[in-house]
Length: 269
Image (cartoon, rainbow, N blue to C red; front, side):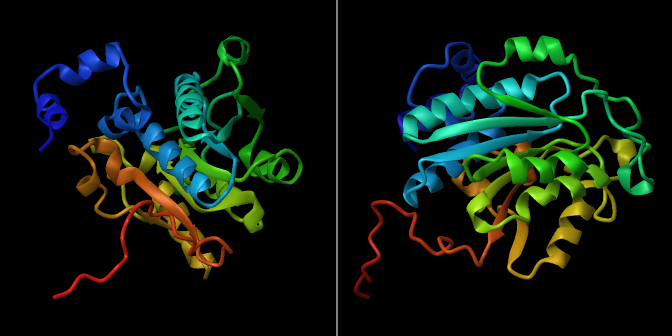
């Protein structure tokens, strides 16, 4: 174990580092020195992938902006990571602005989330944003319209925080476009795979069901949890089990090598 790993095992060290977040971007991503470490992780590896396959500009999306803390955090990590890896990152947030719509049925988990939750103060949020764009309206309409009319660079990271099954299912249209609209693998964070004890989360409702139905409807495109993520992280973090990746197995660049500096020469027995 290197010295930094040993130091990070001490109590309060991470909190102190987050107060003064100096250091290399890749090291800060590895140790989660960001307010949304899940965003930093997903954006970093999406940007790394883009740099490996010759793409100089990508898009990072947050679905479900609400008060805006997540979008502001995404804007921050994209600026740092993009500069570090030499890739420009467009940041886009989707939201109704009026809070959650009425739930469609039990699949939207109305016993946990319901009409009007998470309203946005749009004017106040816009005043705080530096470069991120807001797309306002029902995601069932805006996702497809934005893909058709406004997408300027392939999507590399998506944070899903729409709560409902119905909204998440509609938003997955972002992954239905031609390969020019997305990287061969898109890092996806699904915030609402977990709920409180009363929620009794299961695979037949919510984001789980939306993911399963997307996978069932596509042969060459799948959304899958990133397995064994803990192995490559210094410690367990609660978001690790909610980090997924969209795979377009038919993407022309899906099989392009992205491992840098590794030797693939067979070793003698």
